[in-house]
Length: 345
Image (cartoon, rainbow, N blue to C red; front, side, top):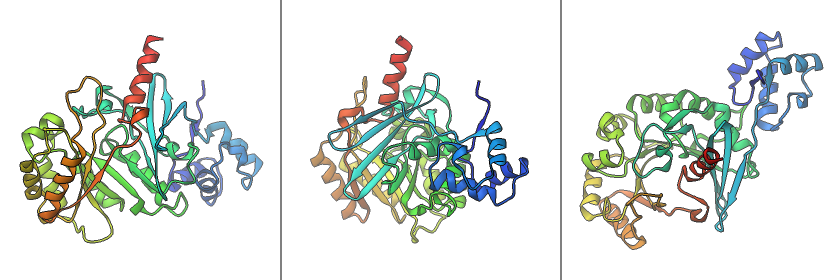
């Protein structure tokens, strides 16, 4: 049994702790970070500016700890979905989405999810555990397109604010000069809205924030998203109004559109009233149907009409049509399929 701990995913201060424990000079932490995040090595033995003796000592207790994907599907539109098996019969998905010169990676933060949203395949899996910062970052470092990625969105499996410590560590590695040195303006973290976690995220990160809204009506949102009962979105919005959103950080409300459910002119009017005066944009999302669900996506014409109503009332709105429909695009579908296959086997 492998008892060595992974170095990949550790922040600079955590790597300094490793160096201290092993009697290595403090600057060795920066050297390790450089090999892990800039040179993308997969073996400690490749860290050639660290002495052979120190590398040998490191390897008795640690390993790089990167993991290759176990499966990949490629869509006709160029979208690729990767599957990572980090634990027995437990896997997470990562989606690579190319769009002209923009290359977006959608990463997962948990095995399954506790939130049980009615339109989400991941929620049907239940919750199996949190990903570590290393397992989150591995979804970037271990795919073929890792050098192309321009934007990262935490919109895959799981609720990022329910695993905030590891998500913040991952964002620190992504944005620090000793890490991947990405601009925080190229990172978006999506959440159903857990007020105390959102507050902490805004204080410790400069990345963009996206709130999953999906209905302006509290009772309807509670049917779609049971979390509304514990954390009303009205409370989240009240919290967001306390912050300055006129800088470079962006606030988005995600609104998946369901045919004849949340796409009426009245819904548009209520959405405008709910968000009035808050500098934000609304991202209208086409729905990828999931098995055994009565929900269907709103037709493109009605989505366009809904967007026009929002913009006529002063809200900035965009439409994001789902991609990768031919490769189990809805989040959680591929991992659910693999899990069911393993259970049968």
